[in-house]
Image (cartoon, rainbow, N blue to C red; front, side):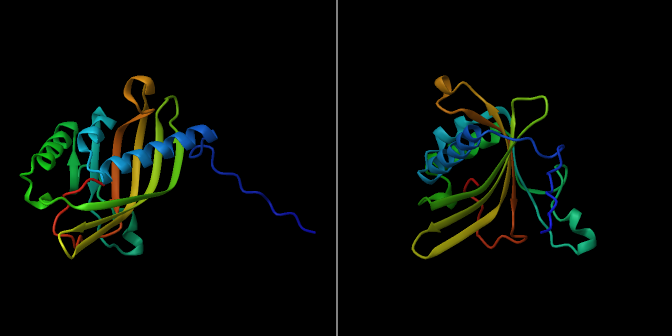
Length: 189
């Protein structure tokens, strides 16, 4: 009988999270998805910190040698690059009835999977990575889907006061698509 060496994860990139924290983070992400699918944008916007950066960098197809340059850096082009001020503006526009791209509103369904949580060094903030699939149906026959990975920084809050155990301090949305075939990106991801 041979013994197989067990490979341990690198300690610099892995900090164990207890089961309760993993569960709480997953439930938070599912509750957020529900708010968006129910078009409760004014409730959804309250999940963010005042200093949030919500962005979706562009993606380009690259050769294997240049794959490290596939996703734009923060100082390069982005599909979305919002602070809380701009997110609130988008919420006001969507809920006002004057946003032509969302009148009548889209019907959406969000699936959040493969949630990975690590604790930041010397901080109570959490790094959360999750895969997502957003299906959008609009008008009679229009359908779009957005697939990708999200990188969130969650900051613990007083759940008794806010209703939620975390606030989103940062969100990076990396879409799998390099060219969006949807006529607009008028939904939140």
